[in-house]
Length: 353
Ligand code: NAD
Image 1 (tube, rainbow, N blue to C red):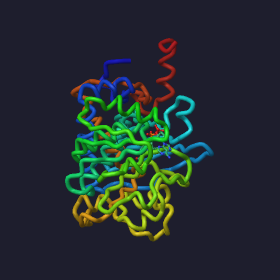
Image 2 (image 1 turned 90 degrees about the horizontal axis):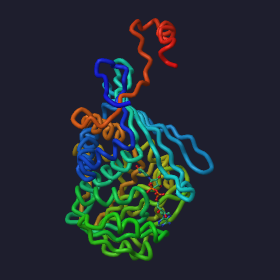
Image 3 (image 1 turned 45 degrees about the vertical axis):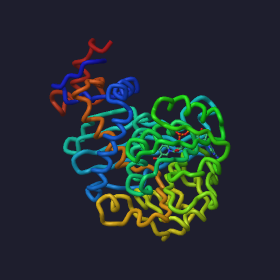
Image 4 (image 1 turned 180 degrees about the horizontal axis):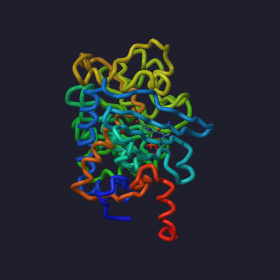
C-alpha cells in the first residue's frame, strides 16, 4: 500500500501511527497542537451547526469503550476510544483511539486515522484553549498531577497557548514523573518534581489533573485550591471516575464542553442535575462570561467531546495533500455499475488469489 489513486473515490486516505509520527516530526508537536486548537476554536464558534449527543459508552468492570459521533452537515465524523486505567500494568495504553471522517452527501469515508496520538494532541489543545480564556493573567506555573501518556502534551500546549514555563510535577509513581522530566528536558521548562499533590500545587496558578483510576478518587481536596486558581481537570471522564472533592465544585465556577455528556461523565456527576455550569462555546463566542476577577476559581471539567475530535480530524485532513503522509486504503467496495456488486466479485475471479 502506498501511492493514492485520486481517480478512485473509493480509496480512503489512511493515516497510520507511523505516518502520524512522521507528521508530528515534520510539522512539530507544538505547531500541531496550535493548529488543532485553532480548528477547535473555530468549531466551538459554529457550535449550533453540529449534531450533538453524549458519547455512546459500553462499560465493563475494567474500562469503557466509547463511540463519539458528530456532523456539521457537510462532513460526518466519529471516534472509537477506550479507557482502561489498569492497562498500563500489562504494558498497554490506558487510552487508544481511531477515527473517521465521511462526506455527508455520499456517505463515503474521506479519512481514516489512528487517533491515540491525535487524541493526546486534541486533548492538550482543548485544555490550553480553555485555559487561554479562563486562567489568571500572567499564569506561568502549572501543577501537573498524573504524569502518564497525556502529560507532556498538556505541558507543551499550556506553554504554547498560555505561557506556562514552570511545571510542578506529581504522580503516585515516581517513574512516571522521572519520564516527564526526561522527555521535557530542553523544551524551555523549569521542572520541579514534587512528593505530594499538596507540594505540587504550591504557587501554581493552573492545576492540571490527568490521573487514571477507575474510582471516585480525591486527587485534590478543597484546602489545596487557593483563590484565583484555574483547574484543568481532565482525568475524570466516566461514571464513577472522578478526581476532585465535591467541595471544590461548590467553590468554583465550572465550565464544560457539552452539559448532557459532562453531567454523566465529568466531575459534576457528583452534584445535583441542575448544578450550574457554563458552556465553553458560549465563552468563546462571547455570549457568556469567562473569568470575571482575579480571586475566582475557574474549573474546566473536561471530558472530551466529539466536536474536538472532528476538529482534529479536519486539521489532519488539511495536511494530507501537502505532506502525502498517508496510505490509500481499499476499504469501500465500489463497482463501476453501482448495482452490480455481485458482478464485481465474479469479475475479480482469479485476480484476488
Ligand atoms: P496514563 O495511565 O498513561 O497516566 C495516568 C497517570 O496517573 C499514571 O502515571 C498514574 O500513576 C497516575 N495516577 C493514578 N492515580 C494517581 C493519583 N492518585 N495521584 C497522582 N497520580 C496518579 O493515562 P493517560 O492516557 O495519561 O490519561 C490520563 C487520564 O486522562 C485518564 O483518566 C484518561 O481517561 C483521561 N483522558 C481524558 C481526556 C479528555 O478529553 N478529558 C482525553 C484523554 C485521556
